[in-house]
Amino acid sequence: MERINTLKCPRCAKTLQSGVYHTIEIYLCSGCKGMLIKQRNLLRMLQIFSKDLMQIIDPDYPIEPLSDIGKSLFCPSCNAEMENYGYMGTDFVKIDSCRNCKVLWLDAKELGVMGLLFARTEQRRRRSQERIEQFEHDLDKTSDATILSQAAEKCLLTGFIIGSATDTFGKSISSVKRFLT
Ligand SMILES: [Zn+2]
Ligand SMILES: [Zn+2]
Image 1 (cartoon, helix red, strand yellow):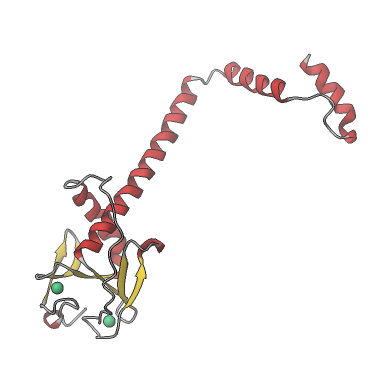
Image 2: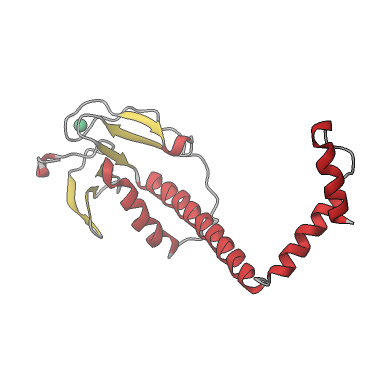
């Protein structure tokens, strides 16, 4: 990633322009809008990008697996053949990466799908967090211990079948029975 002015787009061969997207350093193709990004910046990229994306499209926008272009890409920096792997283990997006340079090549549509997947994951995480908070809130409201113990007793009584325990518990069964009646 050092030879700034010599990097060429592995898709369309236009010169890549270095710059920052928000705070993240990227090399952007002015032609196809694909980008080269350091591997370690991917998560931060998706965090920021997905927020921008959600300003424009709905998180429930349908995702279709991207047709695999099938052409091997060569790293713009070291010219080695890049590896192609499924993002998050799915076939929705295939990312090209260079092991030598620790960089990723993302086509614009690949970034779009990843941003959408990321936004949905975040949304689910927020929803389950909200459910936990709601649950804790509800607990606060019913913090009257008698309600909870009454509910527990009701469960015990309806679920308790006399004589179903093994012999070793024979003695305790009769005492539980006394306790419950
Ligand atoms: Zn390009
Ligand atoms: Zn490389």
